[in-house]
Length: 68
Image (cartoon, rainbow, N blue to C red; front, side):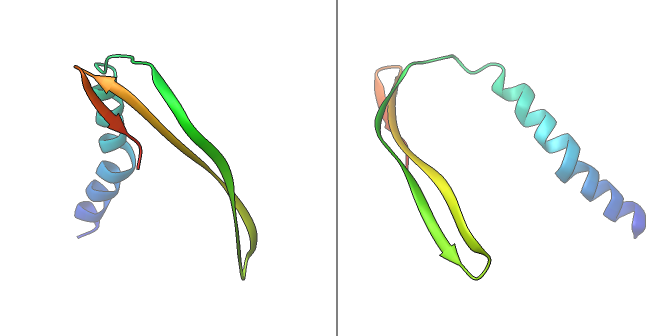
């Protein structure tokens, strides 16, 4: 049981991110256009936090993609 849990944690915390990083090396660099950017402020019981919000678009193989 502990071995299975250890293997799962190894996969989630180390191997999966490493494989995703290696896969991203084959991505083709492309230019993008920033459509809008702002900083969102959120307040909750823990205090205030700030989060950037950036909307952008880019073209790949003639197809337009936009952030969501």
